[in-house]
Figure 1 (cartoon, rainbow, N blue to C red):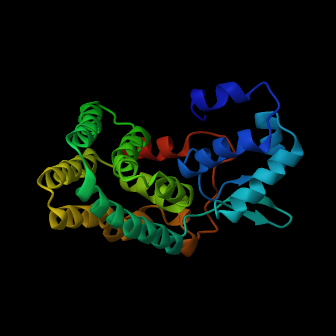
Figure 2 (cartoon, helix red, strand yellow):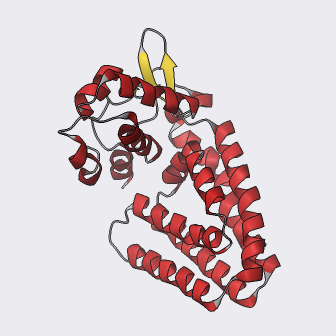
Figure 3 (cartoon, rainbow, N blue to C red):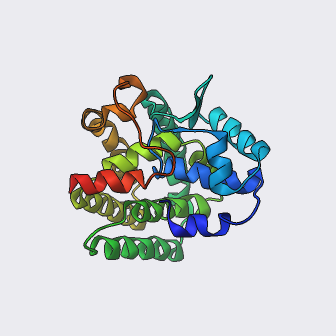
Length: 257
């Protein structure tokens, strides 16, 4: 099931598109729903107790974002991960955030460093847990990087990148399959803080580039492990779970343990 916090307020009331859209989008990009799973307007109406018009409008908006695929006579499919789209989304983040980092180096204060260190502390606390919640870890990662945008007054850029990075988000979730990788990310965050304190722009850019581009080198392994989740390697013999049948990401992480 989707997490209780997401669904509790949605079970017994009529929703409009503005209320449904963020919930369904999150279910897709956070991989509660399996890429390739089929759903219909009727599924959505019954599950969320919503009318057909807002359900249809939500699917059309998600289709425009490339997160669902409308299939004539079959309904709607949660879009498979598109590696070309992943690369485009990563390129946008790399390009924008490198510029933001340079601005940050010129204007940050000791208080800003403390904010980064506080998020880093929370990341280390999370790593000490027996079973690390990958979604919570990525949320902290987002919070860490958002500080750079906030300090430089570029939050619109951050929100825009977040809104168009659904394919990149999903492959990031698939990539974080052991604590060693999480620990490496935290160490890179430590390096970014050290570079910031020293106002060493070259060091900052080097660490950041490694931080963002490392996933690109791991994509082949991820595709080999989950070929049926990717558009380029679609396996028609694989049948995705039914709509709302479970937390897909949790199910594959459990199998891997």
